[in-house]
Image (cartoon, rainbow, N blue to C red; front, side, top):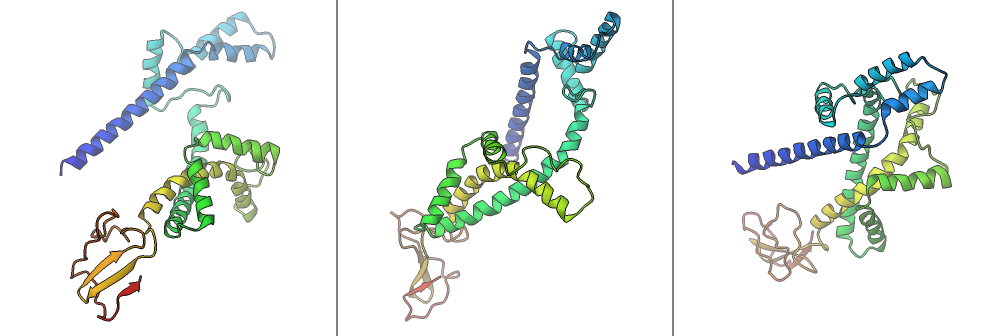
Length: 285
């Protein structure tokens, strides 16, 4: 009884460690680069016209406080974790002075919707193709489709997304490469708006579906019977579940059917064996 809670705690501890290391790596990589965000912002402002040196200095101090880049690197690191714990991510560099939290809140519903729909499609598609490919193992079309999805599984999502953008955004420009809908679109719920949103979501959804389907396909194909199972009977109260190539399990509910071809199938318990006529020798399921 104690093994499962211990396992959950260990996995949760690993999760927290990965999050901590990932956030720390992000901080040090961005703060150890030679690019100073404060000077970049001041340079962009000065290009619009000459500014008073005193005003520039005051602006520099304000920006350093806003971006949290004052003091030593370790002071900045502790200050960074303190602001992160309170949800204060500071202003955006590319959309100054819009807070980063506002940009995330604006994009989060789109991300959740995209991930939810893509995950459901990936689950259904992978399991359906895996079940068919496991049952009809000699079907050449299913073999080819399975090979394509399995080959795409190790590819990182962003690499495949980059390839799809080049193919369908530049070489064959039939899909939009940014945004959630066309500019100046009427956002009142309508069939045209839904189609526009679906069209803009095709490229990111395709990268998620094409990469994720292979994992579900492989898992489902392992549980599928190798060939059409049969029930052979030697008496009305005993049945042996066999396959043409090996003794493949029909489902997890039939543990007496061994998967090893070297071991014979064990007879099903008499309480679970179907009652068969004495004259029948093989009945396809």
